[in-house]
Length: 150
Image (cartoon, rainbow, N blue to C red; front, side, top):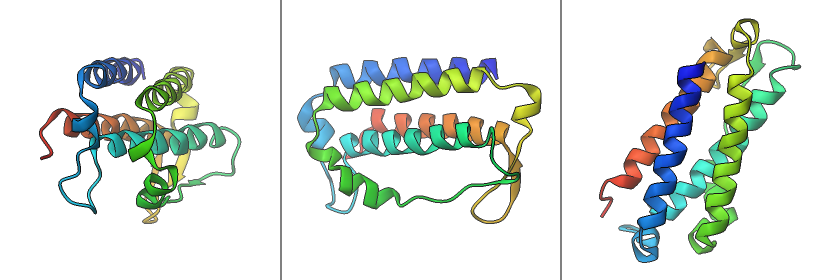
């Protein structure tokens, strides 16, 4: 999982670089009321990190296959009011969560990476997939942020 951890570290650095140069108005701009702003996408990434950190650690001692439950993404973004949160607070939280995830990913053994999981649709996979998918998801959204959503 060294490659996955390296990619996660690179994504954290590129995300921080992007947010350090972006204007507040660009980050809060919403083309449509029902679409997320770039700041809300960052909030979604925080929620994703929180949920996946919990999954990655719970699976270590949980009954197998570990059942992945969905979470209500839109409702969490609204409940946390990321649109009006301080950017520095969001960045510190996002960074700390992802650094902790990187430590958890790096500490996995070949045995633990094969721990079975059951996805919400009933499909079976393993912890390796879940961790790689998390980093892919993060990369997808960071790519969204660096493109013009207007």
